[in-house]
Length: 224
Image 1 (cartoon, rainbow, N blue to C red):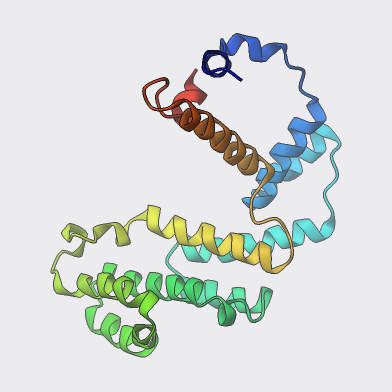
Image 2: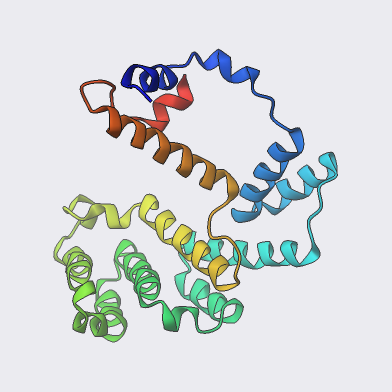
């Protein structure tokens, strides 16, 4: 395909997308997949009731369990999240040391945020220090320990570790790990479609070169 032809395909008027027929059932299944993945149980039940889609009792039960774990992880009860994870996915955290470190680090952050610095230090010595023997965790461990050096850790260079965004990142990672451990897709169909579309557009942009088209932005594309 010539460069001008590729360029034209990337600049198609969004109105032309409307000419592509999308099966309504496919759209519903994509949405359902996303809702199940995110543990939006009430919304899943509403969608099922209004569309006639099928969701098994096992799927509803799984959502309820994961929802409880994620609720703990996002709302300051990491130890509860760890306990439930061990019940739902035995040996997951034993095998996935990176995930275990992330969860334990959240507990450390909880203590720092609560101004319980002595307890945080004791927790770090008992639970996090062993990770210092593994090179992959040394830099991360140093970042978390740096929080102890500031009276106002939220103003430190590593303040992002205290943020809700970081907590959400760990919760998302935990959710994917639990799904994969149960031999279920770790990404929803909607996420896979977005990933694929992004990669394809980025590849086309790369083939044409930066001087021909600007780098693909999913955010800008969705606004078009």
